[in-house]
Image 1: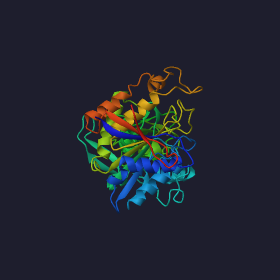
Image 2: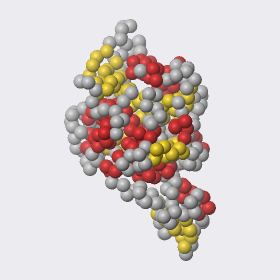
Image 3: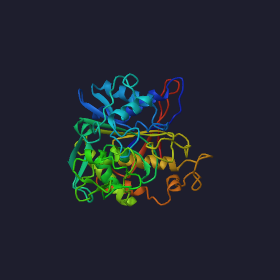
Image 4: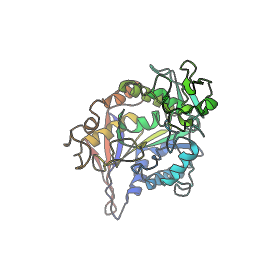
Length: 383
């Protein structure tokens, strides 16, 4: 028997709307059992890049926050700053983007937004994980310091991982800027000389003294570079570039290894939710979103991060593709939609590696929580 994964669809009646179904989902899946009175709960979500509208609807998040508060715990919304320069690359712009996208203090029932890795992505905790590729993980300190963790992930496609779900929301999403760079690259950033204007901003702000001007162009000493990514953000001319040199299996391994670091001190105080709606081809980090590849399916909850991602992928693949999406292959029910999006990505590898590291199990039992109808609630087990 596998891990329990609970599921609600988006059907609603006059007896029960979607947000009320979310309450039953969280309660049935055992979220309340993991939270203690007066504990500080990090609710890890993705606020969406400016211009993207596929992120999880704020009313869903608000209801989950209210469920957490009923246990006597105190939740806060969190994410870590991005590695790339964008609308979420520092805490000020990150919080403004969150508010613009509907995640304000008032709309979230007085739960604050706290960026996990601080003002400029350098408030990190070095967590020993002793894995094959990473001896340590650099994780946003406010997530490490929280008493409990609730991950709410938008399940969608992803260019490197095949899909983004719970494992990516934790492993990549909770990493500081340095941690994100470690997962994406094994070498220091590079300077594109044609774009460099020699302003010295990167030199002034490099904490390792790894940058110098040579013939009025910045040069990074890879031996001194500590991989913090500060130069990438500081460059106003987009001249400092990430070297995306990791092959896909190695990227997945590092992402999963970082997930072990995030959950290291929260084995019995972590809960996972996947929202399978607006299933776009790419991550919410891009400043736009394309047409969904399949219909909105539902919301899943579990105490097992591997099982919930596996169940989510299976549900997506068991759907017919929507007409008009970018999918051109694997359109029928039961065909691999994720592989259709990214044929060169073995998306199952992240799940297999996570199971190998003991994060959870690929085997799951999906239990559907039916909508209340005529005052009754009916449960049915899904194959």
